[in-house]
Image 1 (tube, rainbow, N blue to C red):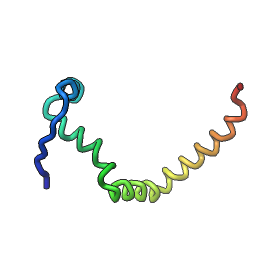
Image 2: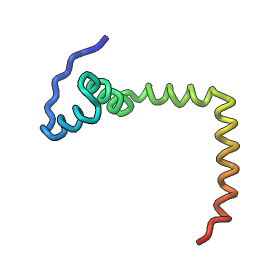
Image 3: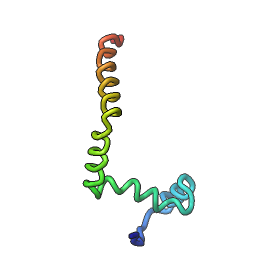
Image 4: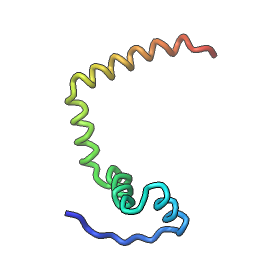
Length: 76
């Protein structure tokens, strides 16, 4: 269920949103930005879902372990 929300923003901010995001897409853009800050369970659910992806987790672990060894080779 969606709710209508009226907000007030500076004219320059509105113009920037309209130019970059486009008419008809501003609400979705703002919702996507705000959602993780107000819905903690959404973020926790996303992290839990990512952790259940065993192949992805194994690949991420392999990548991070391989990268740690590269740090010692960097010039100072």
